[in-house]
Figure (cartoon, protein in one colour):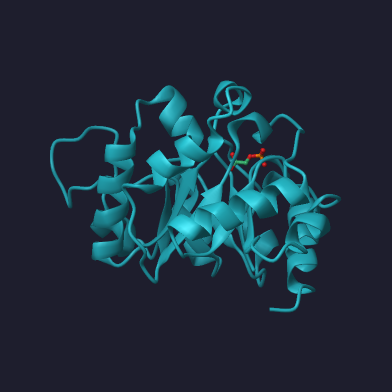
Length: 220
Ligand code: PGA
């Protein structure tokens, strides 16, 4: 089970309060150094495909590695929705990060409109078509309608979708979208749910700790 906390553009809790937790933390850039210093497995929320260059506002894999960062999220739906991230740029970011030695959590998932139109599998097929299996690659299935909304996919829907994803790309798949301490156990009990990418609930130390403890109780 892999539990990752995505702090998004929030300052987040004191990294020292998370010491010893078996989890990945994805803080905003300004807090990367503090998380690394606290001994946390720290991932960035985004990474560029070039090692350096004139790309204002971006960050490269070598710069992250220099800081002790272990990996990065790629292709979060908020990047796709608000910042023009495409399947092609997701592929470029993922490949470059893995080649440089970072681990990657690549995010996929359908919007509410796509789900209503019955396009979930087509969307996932398209998003996954640009990715290749790699030992350091993990996927996060985050249905956009479940992110920050309090709506969670049922454990059965998550299981079914994760199994579909793995039939296309055989890597571990985390579930993301309103994962909380009180719905984590049902999701983690599913055979193809390999952990969670937690947004809102990762900002609260007690909630996040409870989710990590629930994961630790699942036999591997
Ligand atoms: P949420 O966010 O847990 O607040 O729904 C998940 C994510 O966007 O990674």
